[in-house]
Length: 511
Image 1 (cartoon, one colour):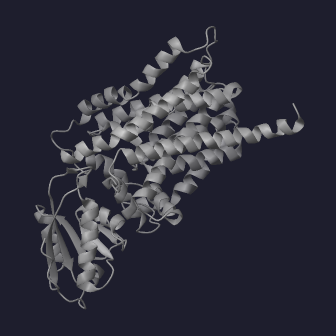
Image 2: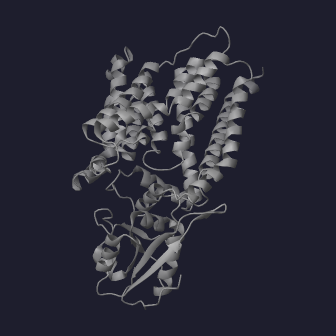
Image 3: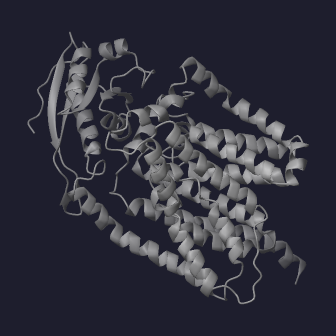
């Protein structure tokens, strides 16, 4: 082999890696677009957009600020809209795949290429990383941040240097700034480091863990100061949700049992594929390999899972299964190393089969969405985009000015911040606590639009109370979502325009 050919091999490996991740990105984007109506954005995601438009705030009443910050940065790369949010979702899924691949390669450095390919195949069978990840919110952003934090931790544990400790601290801070739930992952890191003898002894004698703490605290400092100024409002949110759960929802010990049973059940497709490959596809006589960090990764998986169930029981939470989205993501890396080599051509055929499955989903997925709309499934059948655009047109006709502020129903408000061409600020529930960047006095003086469901008397009364003494125009709307010939139920909403002093009153158009 020539020297030039040898020198080109690392470059070819990089090109191959980029090509594989590009294929993952394309597949993720196809899933994201095929499993929801064109232009649809879930209210969790539009809420993040609303927060992102409020500026570089160090915290929000419901969650820490990482995802709004990321969304704000992304809006500087691509104009904010349904397509750009789908691209960001696909990028999040691709980062998850890249990080889990790296964890697999770290555990089996001799066979990195084959192990990475098998890891991707197994990861594709984990619904937490695919179907459950197409809705971008504070749970699904963790599918990239938890594996990245795990990878940084394992690298620091393997070769504890100050730099690796700093990188681990930054990754850990990003995960916590995305959702406080990530503190359970950090508890798992502590447990895994102690369980990792003799690595633990070398790790704690180095500068790595102490640089981790410094980097973690420094990165978290602005948010910690915000928490102190706001009486820990966002940290209380999970407990408030549990206390306010519907009487029909399981809470406390019953919810903990439900979580403990259902969360690992979602891993069954991965386990089934692993069992089939182990029995029918491995090379005969292939020695069983074990991931170098199998014990640590298992601890990192089990500790958050067990602690979540205990917290649900102890604090009377309702504990939805989606909390487990980031917990089991590293299992494909362990499974891929255990499987070792597959028979010649088997991996390629399996990957081709995975591509066929994605193609089938692309074809039949929209019909499933059509059925959901015709049945009036909550959220997906709400014509929030249509209402946002209509409300903007009504405001412009009445004032001759762009829409700057919209409030009222939380779902309608957040959708208006995304879908309105004027990109107004959001004022959910007309509540200063939920939107401290809005001044009620300024809002009343400059005017605003209130969006309320027609049967929400409290929202309607609050909008008219805030506009007392000024011109108010109330326009009832009836809208329906249509998709592939299916029509959703009639959605009734009221647009309440509190006009600034300089605006002229105009009648609402007849619906």
